[in-house]
Amino acid sequence: MKKINLLVSVIAYGIMAFLYLPLIAVAFFSVNNTKYGLAWKGFTLDWYIKLFHNEMILQAGLNTLILAIVSTIVATILGTALAIGMDRFPWPKKMNTVLDLILHLPVVIPDIILAAALVVAFGFLRSVSSLFEPGLFNMIIGHITFQVAFVTLVVRSRLISIGKDIEEAARDLYATTSYLLWKITLPLLMPGIIAGAMLAFTLSLDDFVISFFTAGPQSVTLPLYIFAAVRRVVTPEIHALSTLVLLATILLVFGMERFTRKMNTK
Image 1 (cartoon, rainbow, N blue to C red):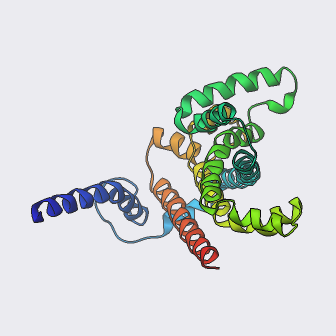
Image 2: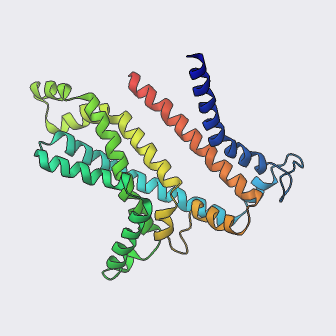
Image 3: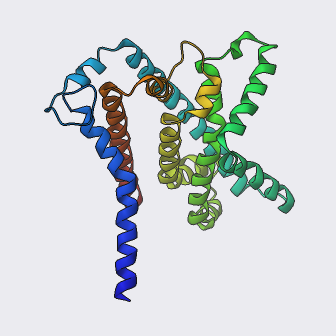
């Protein structure tokens, strides 16, 4: 038994090292005072200073935030409404199965297939309106298409855990539909809504495939910029940028986890 526990521990630590050592290495080279090579030449923050004076990176960062925030807000609203509609409306059994299948499709199909489908769809829509030219608007729509599914799944799992007893009790006390939604259902769903929104936001931040297929010349995001830069040469500025994105993601996840925990204890 001890040998099995030791083996499991070794495998677990090995997996953690495989996942996190590259991230630590990126942070290490972001403060290394050398542009090329792996040798340590001293500590410096020059690469971070140059990073914040690079207009292309700043514009890419702004595009990334706009894309992530707008798509997350829309996807959270649509996903929450879809989850409530699927779980609380008395759908026929066959229709419920079809809806489940449609909901899981964006989650299980490869991103490249979804991106190719979006290219075809936007190509058709461009014949109707020039609004659908490659750019930030198309990217927002593309991100919403896969974010909605993740938000719906998270919120729906919260709905299932809550059950229907509280809502039925509120109905017995003559609660109206609007009162039930705003005063009971949504407050109980809030931890799930926040978790779904956080998941959608982080998925949008690091998405590359769908952004690559729908982006325009003026809508480059950080993943697209990093990809283009790495194809030429990996500079310490890229390490600094990757480190900042990683730290921002960690802080976001930590903050949302604390907030969700407080919501659950109320």
